[in-house]
Picture 1 (cartoon, rainbow, N blue to C red):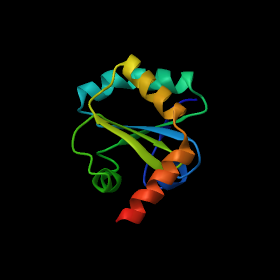
Picture 2 (cartoon, helix red, strand yellow):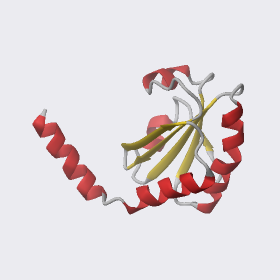
Picture 3 (tube, one colour):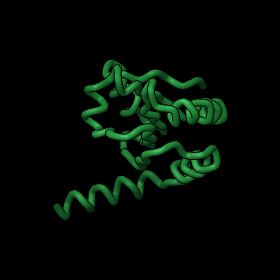
Picture 4 (cartoon, helix red, strand yellow):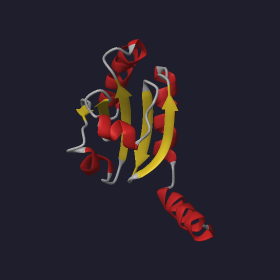
Length: 122
């Protein structure tokens, strides 16, 4: 699957669905963003069941501010609507692969239970 351009109009629909979403926040003037783009695209082709989305920070200021993205590139991983990972900086292909493996291996029932427990403590 090719990467999906994400904006405020389709963001909620894409990230709230069941499954895994990997986001790449980027900008035109960001050299590391452009270096990471082929790695991200290759991963999107290797994992067709995962949604890979790109967010142009200059164009999507509202989303960028809502997620407090201040440095680029930023990579985020979500699963079943839960934010699981955020990293500033471009991961290598091996690091992105490891992130994907870890997100795939998660038992989401355990994650949901842990969220319920944490909310009850607050």
